Image (cartoon, rainbow, N blue to C red; front, side, top):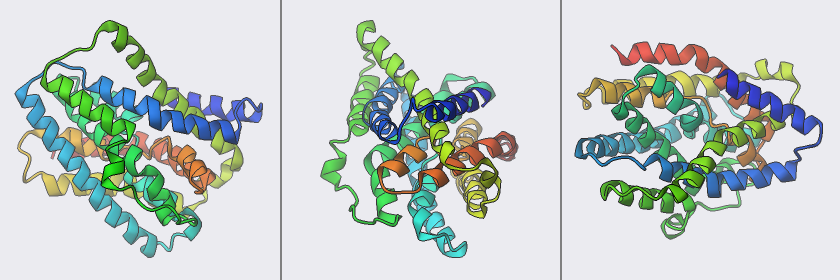
Amino acid sequence: MCALFLLMALGYFMYKKQLLTDDLISGLTSILVQVLLPALIFNSLQIEFSPALLRGFAIVFGLAFIMMLLTTALAQLGIHLFKVPKRIQGDWMFGSIISNGGFIGLPTVAVLFGSTESFIYATAVVIAINLVLSSAGDSIICHWGPAADKPPLSPISVLRVPSVIAFALGMLCFCLNFQVPDMIQMPLSMLANMTAPLAMLTVGAMLTHCPFHQLFTDKYVYCISLMRLLLIPAIMWAGMRFFIHDPEMLSVATIMMGMPAAAIGAGMALKNGGDPVWASKYTLLSSLLSIVTIPIIRVLSLL
């Protein structure tokens, strides 16, 4: 967490020194979605094949999609319940649905569990999130945002999204137990490792538009953080504990669904007519609060 916040601070000062601009940030966001996230997805599936792992992967993968659908309904309810202003409704929906599973979730699971199985389950959630992000992230903000002029992607267009293609190729390699040559694996790993730094630099740059004291005075930031960090994983645990008999699988899925808002939210807001300042605020505050909520979720998942 400290490393992520240091990267945010670096992005903040880079923007202040005009090393980063709004146009550059928008371009970096496109690179993240079109290149780096597909590399991360494919690279995550470069593991030895196991029928049990495939079955567990499929279960958690499906649960992640179910929870994102439920989250969509909860987020819409929250808009009406908390009277969320129209200017941030698109960002509210995006921040509720898309979590920071890759940048914070995977390292957290590695520390808490340390097994190959737990990391595969966590990867299933990350891939599900990244597929939704890459295929519908723009449409989520545009549909609910103030400039609702962009229709959702059609099923055919989703099949052309780089992350979907990377996922299909990665699953094929996994099922065939095929490992790409080192000459390909090395640049893929390098690209995947660039995802978190670029995303956090973007968040830090967006924070320059917001006085720091406003971070703790916006009630909507607290509302979305409460939903993202506690309500969603609690529902996940309560609903799935009767169907999943593997304690580790349930624990990993619960923790992964309780990660803070995605770091890429600010860049996506800037790109799609949302409110990048507010998106930066909920990203930063939810990341701060997750230091407290992740241990709470871990205890809950053990009950």
